Image (cartoon, rainbow, N blue to C red; front, side, top):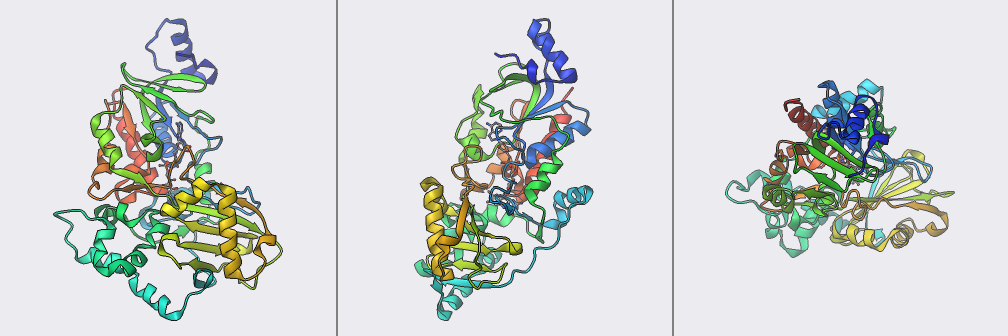
Length: 438
Ligand SMILES: Cc1cc2nc3c(=O)[nH]c(=O)nc-3n(C[C@H](O)[C@H](O)[C@H](O)COP(=O)(O)OP(=O)(O)OC[C@H]3O[C@@H](n4cnc5c(N)ncnc54)[C@H](O)[C@@H]3O)c2cc1C
């Protein structure tokens, strides 16, 4: 095991020095190691600091914030991951933003919305059919009896028939990011609802600001968590850290891929919980479009809905910036993520050319494609319970050996899939760790 002294500071450096000389080989370097510096990890660290515990966060990326990320690589800023403060009535980010002096207005009305089919305006009759399919999920959830048996959303809509059921569920590709046959109706029903707020200066930027002042080590992908001794030993490229406990906030996609090796392996109950949760694939692609507005009012949204499976929404020139942002999800997003940036850019540019009717290709100057599905530190957009597996979130949150605590959006119950939920889950894990004997 490598010594990690070079990374340590203050009291924890003293402990490491002792460990290094063999005078006290079992001493912890720090009270708690937190793996991942997204919303959950940051919240857990603040909670533990307040409880008087020493904490080090190990983050694989060269930045903090995880799936809350304000991307400025094209010049104009946009949120490549989380954008809305959902269910604002109880979302902790309303208060955090207020304390940091960050504005969080209501979701603005757009400047108009148009629906297309294969690049052409959708005929009125088809648009009306589409509209009648909306709301079918909520209507059925109000009446169906899910107490005896969970259903997939696809089963819930089955009686609509093969033409209308995919249309009725297609919106889920842009909200849950997953195909309807892989979504538990019970879990979907449990999700909290409420007002949506936005963060004009960037939700990712806000999360990053909230992480200021914490002891966060970047570029430290954790490879091993050993819990065969009294505490935990967490290994990343710079060496190993001993602690009494660790909080693991990496996305479920990363846990399922086993890129972090647990020794001994995770208990059967935790592995079973992981098998009940998948990752959706909500994805954005941003194009820098310069010199032309193609007769479109800035802030409009265009929906390509010709095929429900490849539904794609475009936000055109939001805030009058030279940027167009496409959203898509499910298997279509997985395919484009695997195809890579060049192919995804070409596909989206073709679609836009059809819808806008001008020479979009010439105006597209650059592309940013944060493909969460293939991103090794995310491997999906957010967690989705499989049909019949809606108890998996709570099972995943169960402490392991009194010293490993899995937290993050996946363990957030009704707050799952969101930054607010991840934050609440991080706080819950911190409180549980703080209750352990020091
Ligand atoms: C396209 C998209 C749109 C979204 N829209 C919204 C929205 O509008 N509103 C909303 O509330 N939520 C939204 N979400 C979901 C939201 O972003 C997440 O639920 C939330 O950010 C998750 O926080 P977390 O701390 O649980 O995980 P993460 O933010 O993923 O943090 C986990 C951290 O662990 C790190 N990590 C991974 N592997 C390792 C390793 N081996 N070692 C060390 N570190 C590691 C990661 O780099 C990451 O920083 C969206 C997500 C996506 C992808």
